Image 1 (cartoon, rainbow, N blue to C red):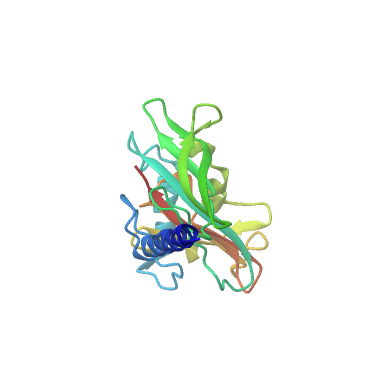
Image 2: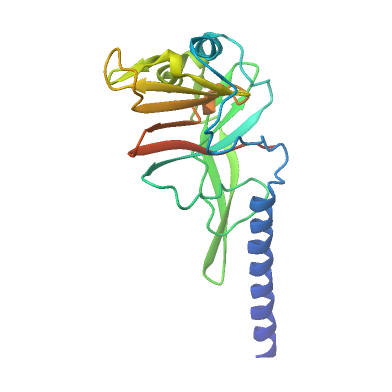
Length: 228
């Protein structure tokens, strides 16, 4: 009986350490190689107009990217309808966490090219409570080759598409962050939707946000990490 009680206490202590470490890891952002994220709400600008749009257009169309050989990245995206009240924490590689969200995608930059792989997770259960962590990006059994030219969402974010008509003159820039606006009909000068592109991040995680003005769905990059 005494041995069982000691084992039970030890199990509780182990679980407490796992959850506590996970919370510290997420809140502190100490994951090795973390890429600093820009502010979620970007309501200011240092430059505007068609010249700014030309800058981001050239980046989207250009061949350069922020993906040196050897980079292994994971990212988390979410689509919201209405106000964003809860921002989830992405599961990381070196920490076991209770209640984190699986990465939306992963990739590895190799000498052959950028490979979009399949997210692999690992988990452990103590006293019926399951914790999990990101394990690896499988580019061996299931993967696809990524190129900037193949990122249709990124192209649409700078050029517009059917139902979203580009308003070049309203384009805003703050550092490496560009905000492009679209009208609901050709020739419109009143924005109905927008896209945000961050050229300091790899093109594979861009656009970092797309949404409607005055309500509707918002798709946002929540987190992006370089892992080892």
